[in-house]
Amino acid sequence: MKVGDKIKFDFAGKKKDAVVHKVHESTVYLKVDFDKDPGKIVKRKLSQIDGGKAKKEKKSKK
Image (tube, rainbow, N blue to C red; front, side, top):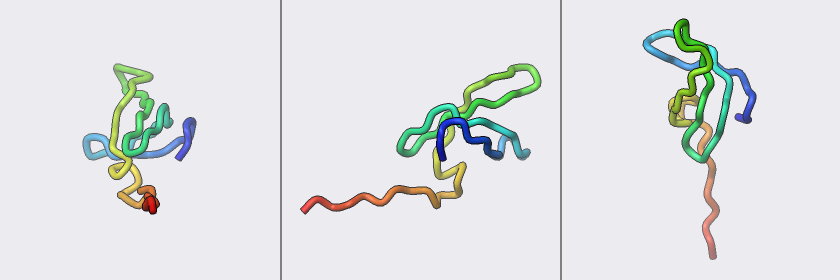
């Protein structure tokens, strides 16, 4: 997932279209157009968006 990607996510029981605004290790900021608030930034956990399959593997230090 990269900045600028268009995705769909669940919001209030419905699928909403969103554009990825920022990406951190476990958090994603999405720009969503609501009826009364266009361009709203919504924060979601990466596991909620991808269903938990996009976790990074950490290498052990030895």
